[in-house]
Image 1 (cartoon, rainbow, N blue to C red):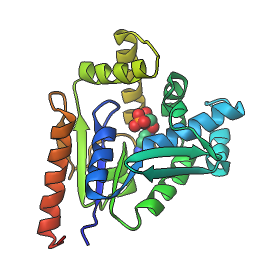
Image 2: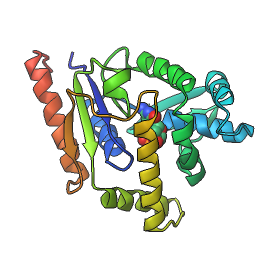
Image 3: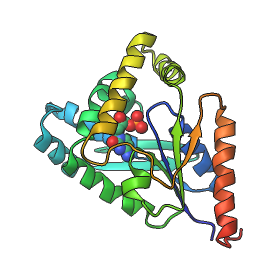
Image 4: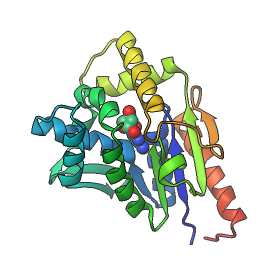
Length: 229
Ligand code: DC
């Protein structure tokens, strides 16, 4: 009964993935990490030795690879051609090329179709860059997360350090700025706030606070729409 679509967009490191995953877990919803899908296509290309600047090659890789996202016990796994690539799609190499690969219109069309299929039954939290604007423009709740660049860099650095990749703060800031520029200036579905999205600045918020905030907005919408438990 209480099934809505929650779209969470924002730049890298704004806190959207962790928040989206925990909100989905709390509501018993499906969590859809669309960034992971673009990362998986990027990895597929690198594995096949296709140059990331080869747009036709990217579309071919997106069309031919077998990609699935599995949700189990609050754990989401990304499976590419029967191989679990959940960790390898977070590497520095994939991160370096993913903005380029995700800028290709043909790649986006294939991914958006998959995303709409997954969200067709509602009851999902979807995070990305174009969810509230393009993928689910009629989403019941749209959130746009932002955070200060230095805080976003700190979070990204922590994530990399857990993976055993030590990168300087200056380099992380440069990479984030470069990715922000590419993601928000591309022609196809750029990162932007939907006019009806609620902006949340997570710079000084804990994960628990972010989750509680999104859940309270979701609850408000369900009550307004007469959805009962
Ligand atoms: O959320 P992330 O950092 O894992 O996303 C990786 C890249 O994928 C991001 O730099 C831009 C792209 N992306 C996109 O173009 N559209 C989405 N809906 C999600 C991600």
